[in-house]
Length: 464
Image 1 (cartoon, helix red, strand yellow):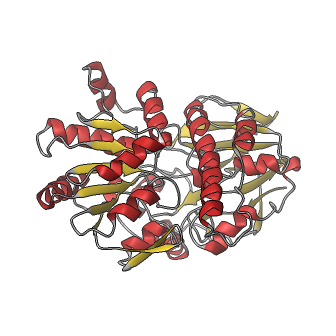
Image 2 (image 1 turned 180 degrees about the vertical axis):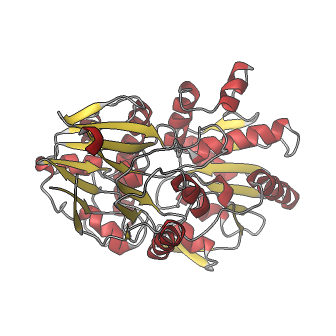
């Protein structure tokens, strides 16, 4: 008998970790970091409930930190198996895991210097050395390329359309007419987005592990480009600076693509745009080099000679000195920095500097998980804690959901509509409790499927 145990991403958006046991083989699907409320973040510091040395492989859906960011810590706890992903995910993890380690080392150093940590001394969750070791364990595959758990179980990655290299994990027991299939959705992408292809369709699924980040909401009907035009032009009139916390992988590149198009169409002025995130800079270079995951529109523009991720006045801020120099900019500029939920990194310094001033704008273009600084700001709080200080929130706060890389519930239901048979079990994960419950109820109502909302640490036997 086979089983799935849910060690993360249940009743929360982050910490994606699913233990899959088949024929005595233990695999971990995703190895993500918990973010958001302290009770969740503390799980990053707890020993993993199963000895990592017993796990043979990690199957990675994509590179975002809530799916990949725990890998170096996992290796530190004696995991030494293979890490399978797409080639694009491997390329992005080369950047992201090193950057994550660097940020944690820097944050620990800063906390010790300023004395705002409760721990003495403050320590990083893992180091750059841990990240380097983890990266040496990757064995990537192309979309659709088959590899095997054993003689009767094959695995392959299928394009999920969320970020470059993101994948559904398709695991099939090869047994003629009695074959069985498990699919892990990872993060589900969106149709008709700039740059990337839309999610592929899957069939003959017996066990589905499905995300629900937007399980209780729809993306706004308004066109995100129109909202972006309005926000930028209003900011120009106020002579303010726009600060955009953006995920370095995926969201930053989509935003740069949009800003470049709007400039070319004359809908916004050519403003100085500062990319202040070493990870985002390196990731944009990967996107610029990797064309296999792009849709035809993006590839056609590349053939026409366009640098699709480079607006006219783009400034790349690699060093700390260049980052600090942005503080001298007083008006009519855009600052894009990570992390996207304002949990760590250089964005904290920019928010600290710009939030108190009314002429400035803070624009969110991605999901803000419960307990993050991004959610605190978005919910209208008058102050937000940054580096141990309460910073007043006087800047104009804006939010555009249309840039999200996650499908909303209608887009996911449309994908499920093409399933040629109901799964035996559908597990709803990767959403806050309200969103997951709403997604489950919609699937039950629309299709009458057997839908389960697992608890943390809960294990289910599956007939596979």
